[in-house]
Length: 437
Image 1 (cartoon, rainbow, N blue to C red):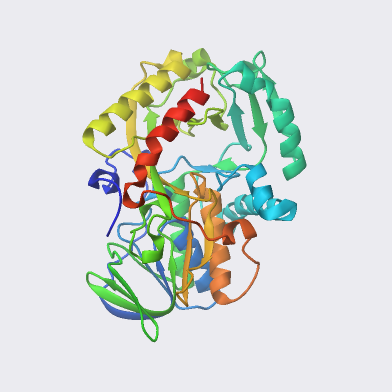
Image 2: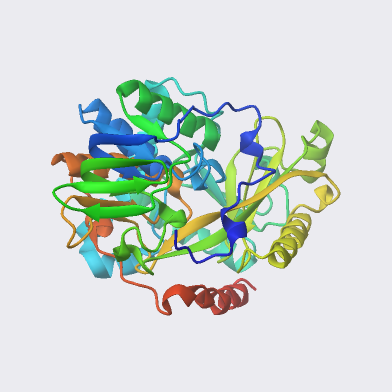
């Protein structure tokens, strides 16, 4: 595989909270030669959702993943099932795709949340869901003053009115901390990402999809049909879906080269907090929340009263960078929740978020490669959007609707600097930190 980070970015996390008490589905290693209508490379939310949709439609489906079920971003994220998927602001999407294209994208955001809710219900997946939408917390008074206008825009865009908390009423809502106001948008919910992924995978297997782990795709060629080579096996298929997101290889296929920019995100989880500790800090809500910084923090109180806190990761995956970001996330946590500064951190891990040059996901055919499709690039909001996109691209492969929205059909360009494009992150982070003052 040809990837742009140091090996540390692709190691199995040793202290990921979501691993505890969860029995992952069993995915055997691919051995020998197999044949399918559709082969999928990548076993996260996108790939498993596509496999489920395809198998239920009667297609023969084989999925291969380089690691174990839920090993990548689908098993490491913060568990926020919410609006999002694109980093492009509404003004940019409106300019590119018009009012109709922007409205179509917003409908897709809401449909993505509904997709996850429907699957949890339909397949009886117990994923520790909670939170009535998500809450945005102002880190400066100026940001809080903008909430009234932002709430009107959200109501016009999504048809639901956000709730606004002033600095004086924050603690009444359970939002104790160093914040200046809050806005809650009642769309979305929180969940346990590995339990959700495992439930999807089991549903896909029950529908007839064949899922394989420890089977990295090391070759992809087109003859009369597509051939995928793995270290111990081979797949022949009429169609292939690339669903590798931030863990993509630059040369599978070559079209992917420099079209994604993986960035690291770091997460810590505390020991369970006592009732007295939660009351002392004033954070008693189970709302999933994030702040108004460009380099945002995201956080929530888990069902077992641990507190999850995440933020952007380091610029490299070298041990020295990991040590530095570990110290920084603790400083930020202590600054924002000072009463808890001495609470023990029991879990800590990182993962890769996938950015695209046009700041929006891509889902559609790979140009110049008949029968080859790709779906990826969720900008840190993949729980809902990746799940939904897996179903959309599956319908595209089957030649059915609904149509993939125009925002997602726009072919992404390449980042400058090729394999050295991570160098773009340092000045971007510095600019964001300046804007966050």
